[in-house]
Image 1: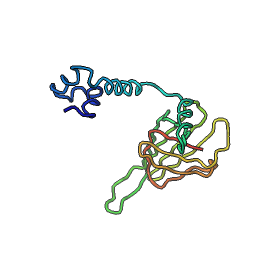
Image 2 (image 1 turned 90 degrees about the vertical axis):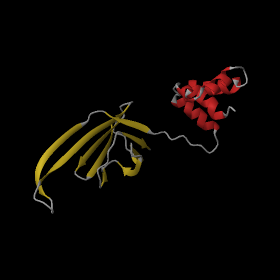
Image 3 (image 1 turned 135 degrees about the horizontal axis):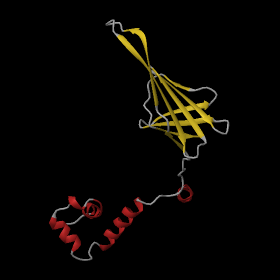
Image 4 (image 1 turned 30 degrees about the vertical axis):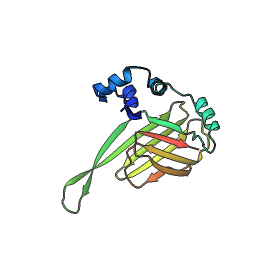
Length: 172
C-alpha cells in the first residue's frame, strides 16, 4: 500500500523507497496529482521570495504580522589575547584573560554592531551609520536564539556571560 509519506519520499528521498513501492508509483497515473503537488513544492523551495512578496502574503493571512528584522552578519573577526597575572583558588597556575571583538553589519550597510567579550562579560554596541536614534530594540543572537531588549543605543547592552554569536537580528 502506498501512502502520503511514500509519495513525499518519491520526490524528496527516492533512495529510501524499496523497489516494489517505486514500481507501483511509477507504473501508471494513479498518483499523478500527488507527484505533481510535491514536485511543485520541491521546485518552490529553491525560489527566493522578495520582501515585497512576503509582505503581500502576510497581508492575506489574518492575525499574522510579518516581523521586519534586520540581519547583521559577522564581517571582521578579530581575537586579542592578553596574559595577566590571575591565580585560581585551587592552584597557583597562571590563567589567561581573553578579549574577543567581533563586528557585524547588515547588507544595506546601515547598521554596525560591535561585540566585545571580556572574560565572562559581553558588551554589545549598536551604531547607525546615518546616526539615527535607535530606541526599544529587540535583539536576537544566533545560533542560540537568545533575545534581549535595549531601551536605546546610548549605552551598550551588557550581558554577564560569554555569548557566542554568528549573526544578529534586530527589530525596531
